[in-house]
Length: 174
Image (cartoon, rainbow, N blue to C red; front, side, top):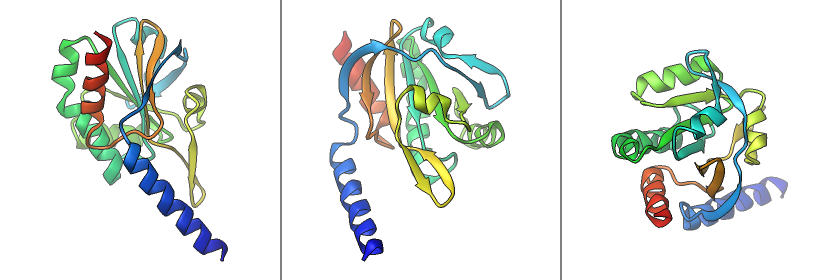
């Protein structure tokens, strides 16, 4: 019975998430000033990135998995257009730097992927965690930071429509 209830709960949660994916909400609160190690082992201070322009911080469960690849590649494919508007992009997951590097290289991702194996960045952004076996994974989420403030958040972020969601939000901020 417990197993059946878990399956039904997961099914309904999945249906609900898909129905509302990409909507997000406009907000205004100070962006977390955290730092993490990127795919190359270099420390990335988020506050320094925020100063360069609007910043997309997206969280994904696991590097090189189908949904995460769609989300990351959506932002990759729109990166030139987003860059013209001064937008920075940071991807974050619990993966270690080596896994982030493999993911970045395999899909030619033009932005930093931040390793957060201890979950400090996940906690700072109040991203939910999911358990898969013994693994702790970040729930797919996305944030837009502008002028040091989170101005939009989506705790049910889309996959292949992530860039379209960001473009829509940016257009609404003008």
